Image (cartoon, rainbow, N blue to C red; front, side):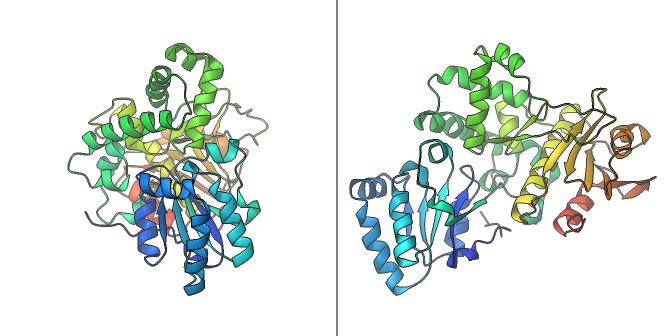
Length: 384
């Protein structure tokens, strides 16, 4: 299995400590071992390492002081949420010895809600996402739309089987092991229902009815998915005045394949309705990863008015993007963009599609998905 060259570069950790967050299998360990081959590595998922450090936390201090007296590479502690109290030792070493650390985690829930020491601004936060178009030399859209882009699963000879194992072992058992859910049967039902509603407006009451739990519990479940980086809410753009926008958010899972697996959707073919939905989800993951990796602070939103006119994605006030799975964009696909840009004069008005060639319809650019992604990662939408 060939390694991917990832876009995220953590070399800044020579001068500043970093929290590196992301779900399991996004490749955090591989990335760190390639970028910092000489760094001490503490994997708290390994029972012997966890036992050694938890039994006597000063061991970390003693070993780190020796390391920093010899070389200045950062110390890596994997899955820090397993032992949040260790952050007090980390904080002390940063203050007393100018030490630098990379602290990885697949869940921030215990850190954010358990009163953990978050180092008082002494560590920057970075996120690692599944692979993106720019990192995969032999990129296959149909494969990505079906199975997602988690590194090991995208290259797997049986991605469906591996996704089933991932969703069963990690998304459910690991969350239960973290003590985040009391009743796993209700949470398991919620995961499937949430996946079926992926990319759509969140309706807590409807989801509660379909899941068989209280609406408040459903809201808590969504919080768990966000804290464990399994999904994120996409907020509505609400700056239009004449065309009043809705205030309900959407939800997207972090990976297309994970969402498809939970919803038991397989063999999604081009031109089908499910392809259009998964294609939109894929473009969302690219946009979110791009903004994160490039540290572009413009918000990513969507827009829908009370008449149902919609634009899939808005970046800041500069870029409006509609995603269509068709290979022949026509006037009927432009309604939402036209209504939106009657009030907001975006620099870029784009339809991303499966068309063969780029073209323009009035002020709207129709871009084949590959052309769009090359322009996105090449900085074509960054200088607005």
